[in-house]
Amino acid sequence: MSRLAVVYHSATGTTEILAKAVAAGVHSVAGAEAAVLKIEGTDIDRGRYTNGEIMRQLDTCDGILFGSPTFMGSVSAQFKAFMDASSDRYSERAWAGKLAAGFTIGSSPSGDQLNCVQTLQVFASQHGMLWAGIDLPTGWDSYGRNRMGAQSGLIALQTDAGGVHRLDRLTAMYLGERVAGLATGPTS
Ligand SMILES: Cc1cc2nc3c(=O)[nH]c(=O)nc-3n(C[C@H](O)[C@H](O)[C@H](O)COP(=O)(O)O)c2cc1C
Image (cartoon, rainbow, N blue to C red; front, side):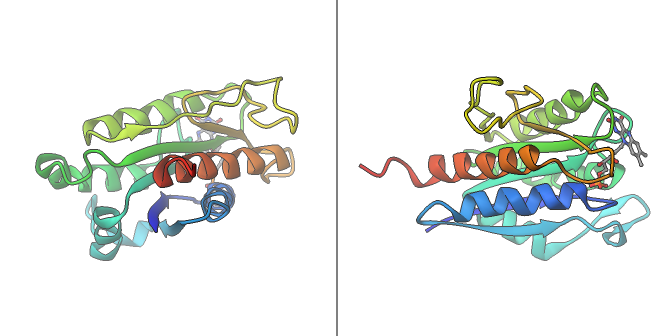
């Protein structure tokens, strides 16, 4: 069984919807399972994030999908606190060689979400992880997934009603499915 983790922060719930869709995509692959782990601001004390159980799960899984809302063109402060708390794993190379991927959502069509995804990608690279982007060519997918056209990770755009677009949810599922497929390896 390949064990993946979806670790995310969400203030108003849209990144959480994506995180759950990513996990559903992981579970659609035989031999893969996902733990959904939420970063809570209450685990941050004087700027330092601490949650031993979440870190234990991340240490022992085969791959991590990182999710953060785009706040001021980057990850949220809560997610950044989590990133900084992982620095002891950096020196131990504890996450090196694990698969990684990332997703974000913003409310502006060009709201610098790409910088958020690339922050996640650099973070994964700092840990020596192996990054998987989205290999769905925009405009060519029969379902219309990857409507925002990002290849380095999932970029979602909040709907006018403040929710998550159906195609962004489908793209999130695809990302989970893709990473789970990479983790479990070829079936034949
Ligand atoms: C402090 C703050 C900063 C934000 N900055 C951006 C931004 O730079 N670009 C963008 O497109 N949306 C921005 N937004 C909108 C959020 O990314 C958007 O509402 C997102 O869906 C929130 O995710 P959540 O529901 O998981 O908290 C910002 C929202 C807040 C509260």
